[in-house]
Length: 391
Image 1 (cartoon, rainbow, N blue to C red):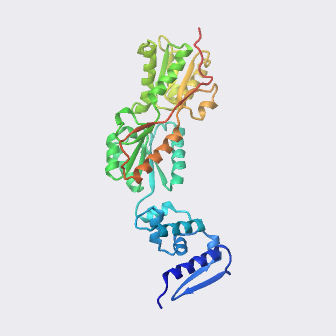
Image 2 (spheres, helix red, strand yellow; image 1 turned 45 degrees about the vertical axis):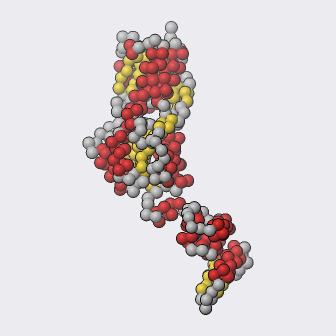
Image 3 (cartoon, helix red, strand yellow; image 1 turned 45 degrees about the horizontal axis):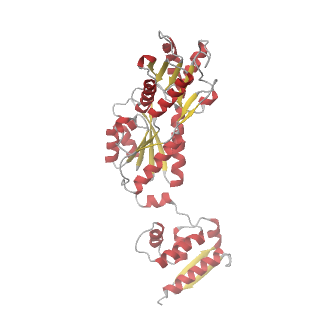
């Protein structure tokens, strides 16, 4: 017997509405022609509605429902309205991850961070990046995989590309020093993995979209605050040499000194590696200078805490005998005594923004315009570790 499609769809819609309003008994069978629709009230009320439920209620196939939900073509306004009405009636929510995987693509993003066998630099920095990326990925229906890669490996690029391929990542966020390597960016892009760089140095600007803090301006602002207090002799404990954004902080300090008519003789710089130990070990080297500094600037908070520890060991008072300032504003900077004057770097916000940039690139198949560098604002946090120099 030939059925009337419109009557059949109307019957199914009536059945679903009845079930939804608990107007049918536990099991109701609606028959039209040779087809039957079994509506289980208990099943519908105890589970999340599926795309098949939407298709049944709206009287179309799941392909049509999918086309409507994806704003696809070849759907009439009447059908689109019916599907959207069914979505609203059932409270259906799109499972973005399942939909993407059904299309044969991965919804996985990779966060590539640097690891060092001997010195694990600034664990809070990496943890904050991870938290920010996770918070951004979840609402967008993406998975996040995190890879810590030893940065001294000779086959570094090969390993990172392999990690991205093994995890089926469609996008990768590179942190320093990997974000400073344009060749690595190109290899990942050729492998089909979109890239966003976090805090890249000036050499890699333009290799891929990037987000960071203006480290040179931050170094200038921090040094300017110390100059305003009256300091004219400085020490600087740098970070790792190949960490180019941290080197920008030192460049900002030199620019601030030049603005006050001071050259590089007004500052003594030593190399650190972002760790507590490097701050503790290198502070005595700075104080051994012919004209010891009255203010010490450290490349990050962990180094500054080590320098602060060393001043206590030497019987010096901070800030009466020596001012100490740093960068990042990690939780430890406010917990030590005295609390550190530091530059607040929006670390979590950096990785959150990186996720959104990646997702926008994936949605547009990489057609999002030029590879721009986006700066997020920093904040100067004045605390008790800095004061005017002793007379």
